[in-house]
Amino acid sequence: MEQKKNPKVDLNRKTGLFFNIGLIVSLVLVITAFEWKFYDDLETIDLGNLVEEETEILDIPITEMPPPPPPVLQQPEIIEVPEDEEIEEQVTMELDVEVQEEKPVQAPTKINAPPPPAPVVEESDEIFLVVEESAEPQGGFEEFYKYVAKNIQYPKQARRMGVEGRVIIQVVIDKDGTLTDMKVLKGIGSGCDEEAVRVLKGSPKWKPGKQRGRAVRQKMTVPIQFKLS
Image (cartoon, rainbow, N blue to C red):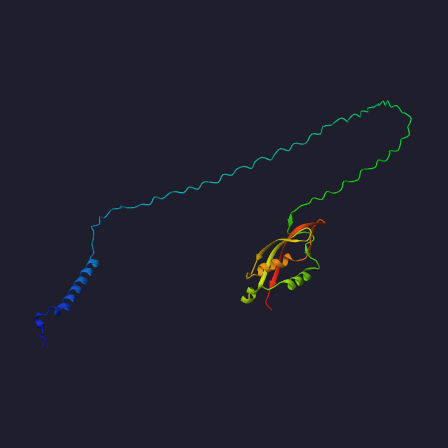
């Protein structure tokens, strides 16, 4: 059996009582500290009798100023001016002219003017983007795309992978209509880009672009569509 402690010697028995007593004492000290008032000896100051000095307000009479005298009007003086004397001047002119008999005037001989020089046509290799008459395939674009559909071969890799899309190729149409300087601007890969360039290289000559009536080199973009049927 466990041995119980004697309640008389148990130290925890009166813990609550001591805690409450300490709490009450602390509250009393705090309240006393806040409520305690200090009164300082204030010296009274004799301010004496304050007498307000009355200030006299004097009314200053308004002085009336006489109006200014009216301005003196001077009558204009009329001065007679003698009439201008008319001066007649006689101008004499002596003409010393020898009159000769008229001689018959010969008609001028006709001179044949030289023919105008032939216009010089400057050959230039400048590549135009926009011209007055744009280049186009022989027979129009409808015939061109018939040629593309007939000659293009769908790459096996692209067909196997199901690749479809549009290949955009930049090409320069030369003065004689030949397609040169081909460059793939947008491709879809899987051999479709190379096949589009191959078909364009085998294309018939186009009608070249014209600027001011003469053939020029023109840069264009040609789209070629790849679509599985």
